[in-house]
Length: 220
Image (cartoon, rainbow, N blue to C red; front, top):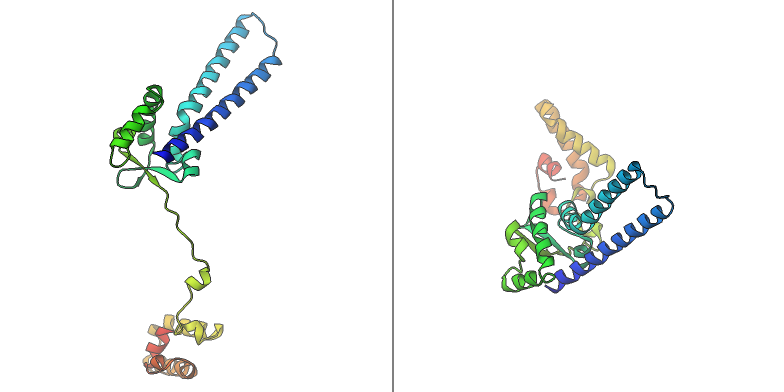
């Protein structure tokens, strides 16, 4: 509950910053525009007012819907706190689920500033608010997957790998033989396998050295 509350506070702060920036921009634009009483000016003012209302609605209500739907279940606040919204079962959040949970958010925010949400989250075993129950969603923590300290070490080949015994030219010869052996006459196939294996066998481990010619090349 604490992480969700801090995430909401962070998002509201960002919304207010966007709103203040919008009001400042509109005020600055209006100061440079002369006001006329003509019908054209009144129509322009009404259009501008409708646009402002649309932008305000988008900032305060579309913010959560769009971020969660198209940013992998996260808003900037959720990302900062390391949580995200997913559908029940761990499936990615889609637009319809984001729309449902955030339309209900409007009512939750108006009724005691998320007080009902807090009660629902505390009473629920999975810390779900009312919007989560309606949309079939759940808020989870983001697991931090640590990358290997050294990818080269993590994916290093075992000691019997071909790179331990062959140079680049030899690897290419073995590879070409394995690819073309089925098209070769049996005698030619056995001869080439023997030549390649004899060239390599002194350098391999005793376990590999005991293998038949073609089996040795296959392993390499």
